[in-house]
Amino acid sequence: MFFPISDDAKQAFVRAGSLATGAGEKFPDSRRLLASLLAVGTHRASLILSRLGCDLAQVATETDTLWGVGEPPGLAGGECLAAAFRESQTYGDQHVDTDHLLLSLWTKADDPAARFLEQHGISLVQVRQEKERLDRETRCG
Image (cartoon, rainbow, N blue to C red; front, side, top):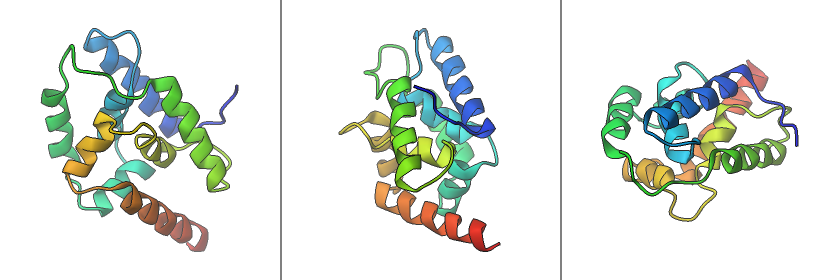
């Protein structure tokens, strides 16, 4: 299946693959995707997280030390991408972007990436609300 994907989302996914390789893993998962979304820069997911009070640099540092080799994996990267595509369809968006990748982290019950965000005070409901706010601003501005 082909997923129309933004350049920012491609960059995040490629970086997640590099992070996985660096950790001795064959494929990226939700943990590496979150670490990538925290590090990629000024894209929709980082804007949403920042607006929710997330200190991206601090949280990115924590993910580096938290998930070492041998940690239980999160949702597989391909499953994250499929879930992100479903999220883009739910919102009527034309392509998968980093905000959809961020939302995909909550696909699997008790996913380590989603649990990590929740421990930092960021919930799925908050991310959805901020995405919708950003969508309205983008359409109006």
